[in-house]
Structure formats: structure tokens, C-alpha cells
Length: 162
Image 1 (cartoon, one colour):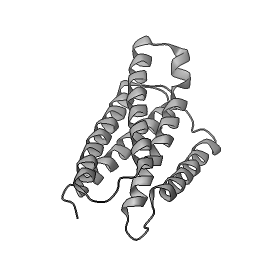
Image 2: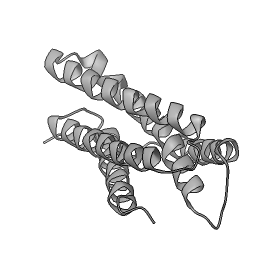
Image 3: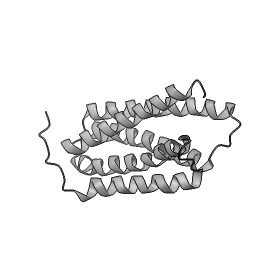
């Protein structure tokens, strides 16, 4: 086993935790706040760090790199960066219209991010033994199921901003 695999996996899983907290906390409150942005940025930093560590592992390994995972992971990282930058714009402008729809963007980026996360997870578990294409299909199904669960159920009651 690669010595960087555990820190890389842990860091990317921290990205999932931070980003999920930020997205659903903002969604529940109904209004983007600086503390939500802090969680988006923590998730982005952890994802970038974990991705860098995984890249080192991939370069030192003889195993082929899945182009599907590489492309979806890069797109997800870029979407997270764009999302964080847009959050800064929304917070600086104090525009009510931008505030109203921001959680839809957050949830969409989070759902897209789940695809490369689950894809890497599924390809990395030897007992499952999925190639890139099959892992992509399975992870897209996971993200679709998560999206249905998020959008199907009634909206959570909005909490008053403090």
C-alpha cells in the first residue's frame, strides 16, 4: 500500500465532510453567511490537498489512471473554486436575488462533486474491482439518488439568521 494513500483518502473525506456541512447548513438557513463560505473553503482546500496527494500516488504507480476520474475530479475541483468565488461575490454584493438562489447552486456543485468522490472510492476498493467506466456509472447513480433525496423531500423549515 502507498504510504500517502491514508492521508490522501482522509483529506478527501474531510473535504466531503466540510463541503457537506457548508452546503446543507447554508441550505437550511436559507441565507449564505460567511461561516458557510468558511466551510466551502475548507472543503476546497482539503479536496485540492487530497487531489495533489492522489496525483503523487498516481505518478508513482504502474497502474493506469482513469481518464474519467481525472476529468470529473478536475471539473469538480474547478466547480468548487467557482462556487467559493461566487459565494464571495454574493456576500460582498448583499443582493437579495443572488441570496435567494444560491443554495441551488451549492447543492448542484455538491451533487456533481459526489461523482468523482464516489468514483475514486469505488475504483479504490479492491473487493469491488470496478474500472473507471463502471465506477462512473455507479457514482452517477449515487449522486442521482442523493439528488432525489435532497429535492424530493419537503424543504426544511428555515431557521432565523443570527
